[in-house]
Length: 61
Image (cartoon, rainbow, N blue to C red):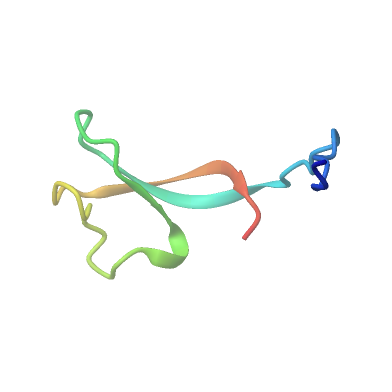
């Protein structure tokens, strides 16, 4: 016999919150980060280009 937990059919929905972000201005780069984690120089950590402010709907932290 197998006695295990049954998975519930109801999954909790993630709450999405409108969050301020900075995304890379270079079209070939997909880098972005939340405003809380941006460095003072506002350069993309992936390619070194400048970053532009924006908003995204992200899961609540």
